Image 1 (cartoon, rainbow, N blue to C red):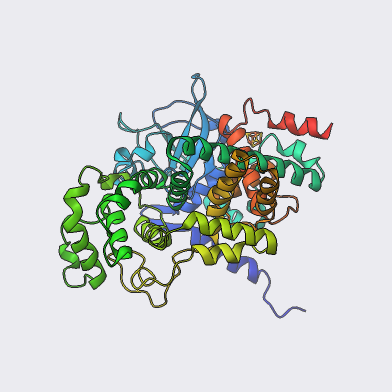
Image 2 (cartoon, rainbow, N blue to C red; image 1 turned 90 degrees about the horizontal axis):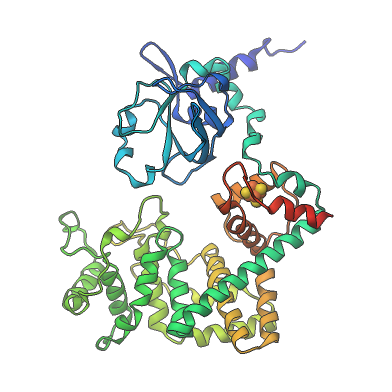
Length: 483
Ligand code: SF4
């Protein structure tokens, strides 16, 4: 006979796990916002009975893709109100209607595409806000039961709505066919990037096109355009006056200055703890600021929200200043390519080339005003290195090889490209894998080219279709490949 009391586990789970997802408020339990998002994601609703707070019927044709990157909670939903034709847009989930204003969504441009405000309890919206859908009376099971279900294994499976129409055809492909298809998509991406760099090189020269590509990649996805602009200013930044005895400091100060990321006055809150480095940069920039005044970017072009500390643009510019101060980057890259091809060692040697010596300030601080770190942090990590290689360095060499009609070099670059180990996973890749392969992704080589292939399919197909895969021709392509 068991010494564990009957139903002990089930009772404990019910009280502990259910309670985590609910909180008491006034007249009864209310879900956490996270639980409400999961309810929407899985559509655990009386879907035939959905009404807006002002009484219009709501048909959810697609709940959208859950976004974890700031902005509205669900992107690209498709919703029909009454007899209107379907609307495409974003969905925001909040506990109360009032949160629309309280969370300043009404003033945030990122929320302009919201077509439905999903809440737990809600009053009719004000005229400036999106339609409100309250879920409290529309759940398909009691709230505590939903809390338990959503913590269970069953809820880990993707809802059918998230799976793309290409999922069925792809499931019928042998893994090696999927690999081959993704490799060809990756090849198309490499060529497209090489052409883009070539087009820019025709205007500004090969070397400048390389710098612009590197700066854009350092901007990651949030600050690509301001980084591009700073790169366009490099001829000015490098040409004006001599850089003096401390070229690294002068370059860091100029890049930070023209980017608009240095304060115009020393902030009061830093008064007591401004580092000697900051004072030197600030003094340096102060002397030169007038000479660059026509070029200084407004600070509002930069985006800081949702950035990891290591991706802060000041830190990225400090890294670029190291590359510029060392000089001869394109020559050193050419040498690296020759050695990489000969020795078949790619990543470590490129990291060595692009990783600067420890920086007395930036190795120890995430930002200008941030406290000293307990341990030094490299200015360039392996994940960012993969981005630089796949998006800039290898396409740049590919462009050079094509321009010089050097087929052997082209093949060598492609060999490196296809063998490069995979980079950091991200939300776009995760979502794409879910849409294409559901919960059963085939075993694919762990290379960056597989990731590039997936991103190219997004670019070529998903970006041109809606969440329902309307008019997407990728399933047709896969069927043809199978046939
Ligand atoms: S849009 Fe096309 S490629 Fe993207 S998931 Fe749907 S069917 Fe697949």
